[in-house]
Structure formats: structure tokens, C-alpha cells
Picture 1 (spheres, rainbow, N blue to C red):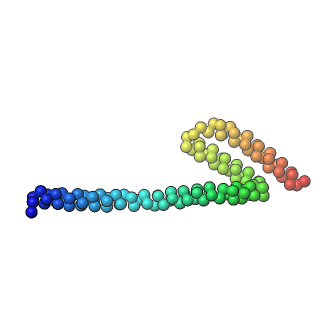
Picture 2 (cartoon, rainbow, N blue to C red):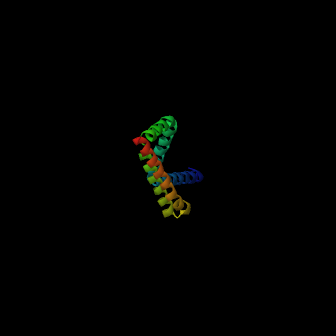
Picture 3 (cartoon, helix red, strand yellow):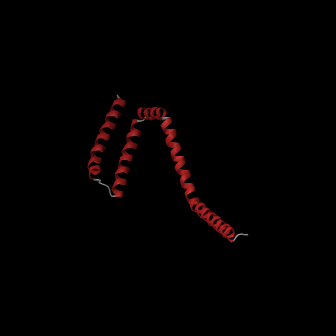
Length: 121
């Protein structure tokens, strides 16, 4: 047999073995990413579902706001305070938030008092 052909066959075999090792290594590295990619796919599917059902979700939100305004305001207040704490812990600019928090609290308290007086009368 021609020595060049033997050399080419050996080189081809070495390349195939190297490629197989590289494929195995790549698959081992992707094993850790598979669960992360599954979570990302689930989030993407959830966002797509939310976009497709936006009118329904908006209607439900309006019904909750109309039927339970105190609950919604209380949750909004807690969310606002949570956002301010999160920003402060991250090292953001909390100055405006800290100044606005008492003002927002006063406005929310006033609104709740007015709602309570309307319901009583």
C-alpha cells in the first residue's frame, strides 16, 4: 500500500478521535446550561402567553382594583417601599425616593380616608 495513503488514513483517524473528544467535552460543558436554558424557555413562554392574553389580564386587574381598592393601595405602597429598599441596597440614588416616600404615604392615607368616608355615607 502507498505510504502516503497510510499516512492520510492515520491522520484522518487522529482527527476523528480528536473531534470525538471535543464533542464529548462540549456536551459535558453544556449539561450545566441545559437547566438554565429550560428556565429561560419557560419564562419566554410565559411572557408570550401574557402578551396573547393582555386584554383578559387587564380586565382582571381592573376588576380587582374596583372591588378591592384598599388592598391594591396597600400592595402598591408595600411594592414602592420594597423598590426603595432594593435601590438603596444596590447603591442607587435613593435621595428622591426617600424624599417622595412620606409624600406618597400622605397621599395614600388621604385617599384611603376619603374612600372610607364615601363607603360609610
